[in-house]
Length: 178
Image 1 (cartoon, helix red, strand yellow):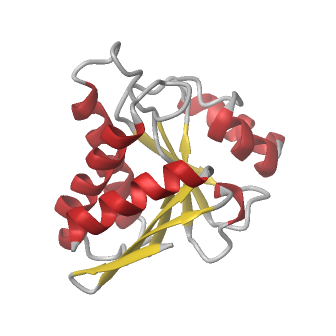
Image 2: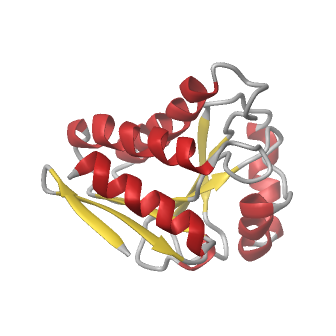
């Protein structure tokens, strides 16, 4: 686990399961445009949250790349799920702009709801084909720019499923924020 302080706020990277972050107020779903169950993070979150999540999300869809919407967490141990549609690498261009928008919009939405802690997966780095090193760079640069100006959000956690992704995100965290 890598952890740094940024203007009195905590940014950390851990290896784990995004659906089991019981000390976090909101988890972020790497959603599809229709906000429905799918593979990867979206499938895991919908499976753990239960069928009520799809019902709640249906009227909010579709969303566009970079957009963030919020729902209750249903059967997850959190209060909220923030759903973001990341860019498909090489299709939704400029990909770095849309990925930055995902992280920025999710953090700003959390802050506007007085959410103090948020957990992100590696948005777009799975089926959407974003190279992990580039995804980590965008994520950490966005957190460094946005988090200090937010009033309520105090902790940002990146939850990575695999050891190699966790290593890439942790290295980028330490080199970008420290």
